[in-house]
Image (tube, rainbow, N blue to C red; front, top):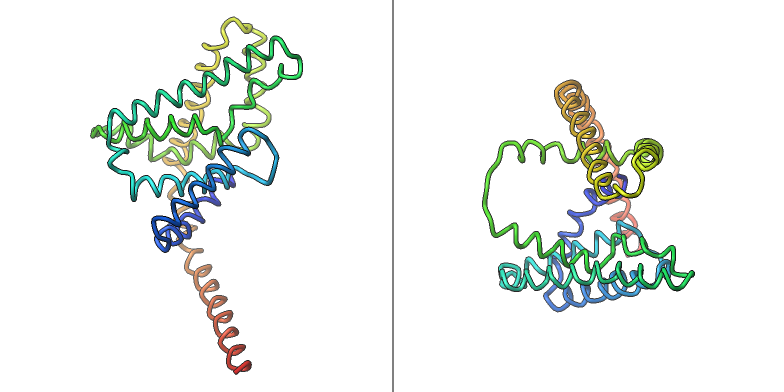
Length: 248
């Protein structure tokens, strides 16, 4: 959750950086990020420092290059279908291969889930191609718009530390103990539905009850915080100017 909030704070700076660099520099940046974080780091975990925030920043640069210079391909139905097929084959090919080798070599038996990461290049390819395919269609839905308006709240609720670390594993363990591994696919879908429903109900309740109060409090606090921030900036700027004058 903190990664999500940090990215919200950073993306205006990322936009400024992307606007300031030319096509070749942006391409080189994307290639380096892909090689480091969706290549080397994907194959060899913990080889050098990485985090979900770094992955998201890398993806942001990649998407920026696509939106600026590759929109012809991004709009191509054939290209995106081929891209999705490549990502699908790569994703499940890795899982099948790891599962096959894990049954024959003991040191690989616990590696099946190692590909379920935020920097899986095949999953990234599938997501980009699916977004491009969906973007070709235009539709409106009040229900979807309302749910999407609650999506940030839903994410905050279902990814909070208490639910993610304690209650969700307990619920999953109870379901497996009661129904067994034979119903794993159905239990997985049911778990997703239960977690989403719980998050939606809580978000809907929050919006109808205390959201307005929270907004009023924030609107009263914001001017004071903004004033303090501007005062701090001005002091730092004045200090820099005074330091330059002393040096000259």
